Length: 494
Image 1: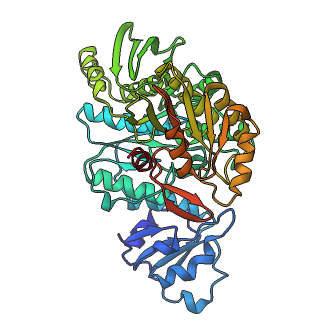
Image 2: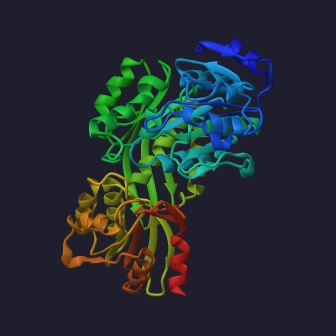
Image 3: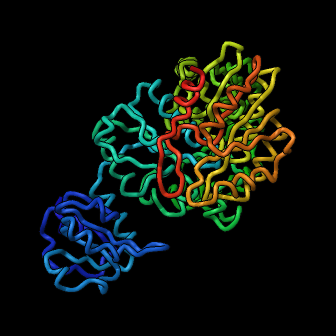
């Protein structure tokens, strides 16, 4: 695309130095990804300034550089490239992305909340497919769609960086995908990773403690979640809210002030009012009322929290794609075919003694509480849970998770999660400080801990391997090692 033509449409430019009548092939904010004829945005950051990487970007072939400060570079280095000065490089980046990666999918559903984002996004993708729509989900599990993965940007973040987001959305649109569910994390919202996107529907699942390693307080964490409804969504947008959570009244007020069209779900008086949830083993039946008529959803995924996730998706989809009761009934019957999300109460195996082993991503106190309550309903025998806590993450939740595990499980195995740059033994010690040591075992090596936990399983016990879920790696120090819990379980059994 011609750089001069893009610049003519932008407002956040102070000065252009050099001949801008040239073609640019790509936009990057990471100098390592720059290739010939890219434009590199040297963004100011919290710890490092992008201007420090201008020379690296030029070396990799950048044709143009955007920055608020070129003083770090010698004029000799800058002779052959176009310099674009802007007092707000990020705002200019958003302008560029909206022009360069147009068009994007027409219907983007953004889901925020502490727990359930990944499940809601992936359930949403599947339900849209039941409606015959080409769809995708973007979040913790990456980009899930029928589009060739080799043409998509990979990310390990719940909410990818802004450039990757735009690139992937543009590729999805090129492949006729017009409905996309995305996860909007508090950090992603605070860092404006979805800035400039036109969001059709915003949804909120629940709110509990998390990410206090990044946010200064629980109040700041909540405020960052609210950025979706205050700043990202245009006034009068569709929003879907859980009416049963303590924060509902506050979120409702925020949405009303923005004149959003509000759709609620939950047991309390709601647009999608849950009348009853029936559970038997891993099967569930939700009876809910919508438009003064009762409807039923049956599916083979256990947990009341999953019923909330399903209804959140149904409300989000129906807020955008209205349908008559007859078509709605067809859709609700198709939900019985919905597939569980990887690493979310994922059943790995049943042993000969009928003991069952599940993997779940539960890495917050609330998520662990939900999973263990569910495990209790699935067996009259013992519940065992194996977990640890991640290093360089919210340390305040560690003893709380230990306390919850000991309250709800019969045997607790404390082990390592992703210790990262922290002392793994100190992390375990903090978790153990909340535990009843009479029924708690500490085994540092997670692989060995899994083997020993399986060896302890008695008739009809349930073992929950919590914390890592879909992850196929373990981070120790600054190195990432292969760690596939499903494989480890199956090898241990053999």
